[in-house]
Length: 209
Figure 1: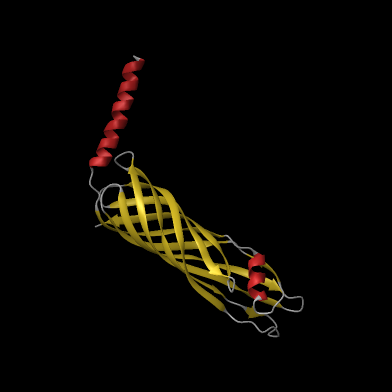
Figure 2: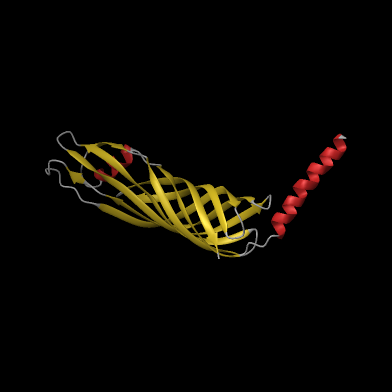
């Protein structure tokens, strides 16, 4: 009896995998993601950026914000896709005290990316994926003196970095899917703005054409 039950389960699982592998999902797709971002910087990074302007400060920095993104790509087969994306990484408030003045502002970042995505379908509807790619990130440190007595300037940086991620995907049918995932942008900003990684925790929906 137990042998028959085990055999039945094994057959069901193997049938699901075969079905997942045989259903062709190749073609163009596009999607929308929304979630939360976490900035891998702290107040000391803001202080270092102001130090480059000759300003001594002690700063506090929010490290989380809402993020969203758009993506489009081509899935070559059931196992691999190439994807381009835009992501708003976040707008993070900070407050810097100089002892005689307070500087307020935001660290803002966004990115465009090109990634290869490996996909493993383990049923006809569920699959897991991993991604790796290159990014072009834009970061800005906005600064404003509350009293107007401290001369400040906004700084910005555009640079290249790497992107890694992973997640799970659910196909409602051939055309529509949903996903949950994590992306890490390894380097955002530079010493003039503050620099660090950004992690995104996203939910998304998409459509195949």
